Structures are given as C-alpha cells and as structure tokens.
Image 1 (cartoon, rainbow, N blue to C red):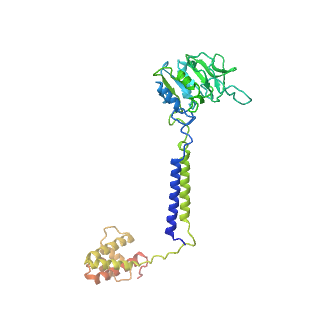
Image 2: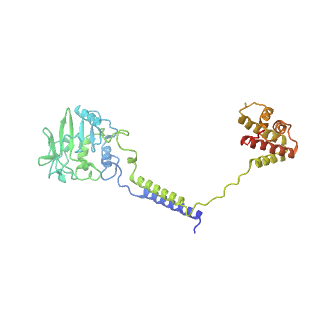
Image 3: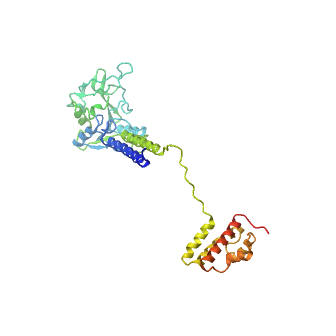
Length: 374
C-alpha cells in the first residue's frame, strides 16, 4: 500500500497538472471574438477597427466618449444602438439643431424608418450589390455598394431614398428639424469583413469624413456604471472555464485528502499530572538555582490570592488574616497554616519542599470544597 506522504505528493502533482493545462488553454486558445459587434476597437470580422483606421487616415477626428461635435463640423454615427433613452433624446435634439446623424441599425428608434417586409414575417433582404440611384453628395463616385445581405427600408413620406430596390431602398435621408438623418438597412457594409468590398469604403469616406478635421462622434454603449451588465458577465468565457476547472480540481483534491480508510485511530490520552507534583517540581527547580526564599514568596502570594478570592476578601488583606480564616477550613493545625502562609522563609531545599506540600494541601482542601469540620 502506498504511504500517505506518497499519496499526498501524487495528489499535489495531479492538481499542478490541472493548473498547468488550464493556464496553457487560457493563454494559447484562440479568441473567438475581439469585442462587441461594430466596435471601433474590435478586429473580429463583425468589428469596425478597419473603419476607425480609415477615418483617422482621412484626417477625421474620432470621438467615442459620447460628446457630440459642433454643428456643421462633424457627424454622429450609430452602428449598433445600445444607447439609453436619455442619450437618444440628446442626439435627436442635437440633430434638430442642424446636426447630421448617421444610423445603420434598423432596430434603432433613431432611424425613423421601418424594415421592408418580404415574405410573411420576414424582412426583405437587399440585393448583394446596389447602385446609388440618387444624386446625394455622399453617394458621388460610389458606383456599387455591397449590402452584405442586410435588409431594405420602407421609404416614408418626405424622405429621400438612395440605393433603391423597387419601392424600397437601402439608404434613406430625411430632415430632422434643421438637421439630417441618414438611415441604412444595416451596418455590415462597414464591418471589417465587408469594408473593402466594392465602394463601401468610398461611401464611408464621403459620408463620414468629407474633409480633414471633421469630427466623427461614434456613439457606443453608455459609460461604465450606466449599463446593466454585471462584473461576472464582463469576464471572458475562457477565464470562466479556467476558474471552473481550478475549482473542480481543488474540490477533488480536498475530497481525496479528506478520505480516511478504516475507523479513526484512537490516540492515547495525555497522562494527567497531579498539581502537587507540579508544585514540588517547580520548587525543586528553583531551589537548585539557590532561590528558595523567592520560590516560597511566589508560592505563598499565589495561594493567598486564590484564598482571598475564595473567601471574598479584599485584594490587600494581610496574609495573617487570610491564614486565620483558612485555618478554619482545613484539617491542619492553626499554627501550621499560619506558618505556611506568613511564617519565616524556608532555608534550604528540604524546608522549601515541606512548605510546598503544606501549601498544596491547603489549596486542595479549601478550593476543592473538602473543608474540615470541628
């Protein structure tokens, strides 16, 4: 049978192997995503890092803090509407004062246009490639635009369609007070996976960065503290898996170490040592060092303190008074009790041992309740 130290080493080795494998998986496993969809810092196919780089190289200033640009000096961009109602109301008021708002999220209330319906309960998809079909300044030079399979929008009354497909359109421009709102059937055309297709990048440049120094306010989710996501939901799934593996390994190790085969081993109890023997041993130890008088004083002070507490006497009661009261509760002669508690100090080891035995007898008879009668 393997010894307990050997089994303990094997258990720690197994736990260490699990930790190493978990850390290797955490570091070496490929990431499935690098951020939220259409996020300017995400390099995933559905991210928008390429669009952010394009705008910066065209001389535009990218703002992701939520601050809106001055009227006439920039645009507000919404690719994935995760704003709250207060932020949407602020953006709408800004557009009504003369701002230009670009919205590419068909589910956003900011678009002001509904998705066109094709088959029952299905959105009408846009053709894979569309021509501008309009004379909007931001559509000039864009001969073809890849829609990436996003949907078409119904053209509301008073709106200006662009990239039409029948009675519907992929892009719609409408007035919002003194400003303009340009809506698209989806934002996939500006994602990392489709920005380089056809004239998608040119359309983004014409609409978002028509000149150097233009400010593009990229409206993202609310700032930290304003959302509903919990801290645990922000932890990557690989880290969660690694923590779960470590917790399982630790639980198995604890259960394995806690398992005991057979009945508990009975251990021999400690041998009780009578108090008198401890007193005698203490007295002998101090007496060997030539400190008989100091030893006697310590033993007498200790017993007097216990007797005062037992009889309810004050802390400063004289030892003689304590001895007179104690003599009535022991079988020893009165004078022997008085000499033991307040007599002359002993001389030599033999007298110290006799004094220690007497004091121990007084302690046992008084404090244990075995008092003498008569």
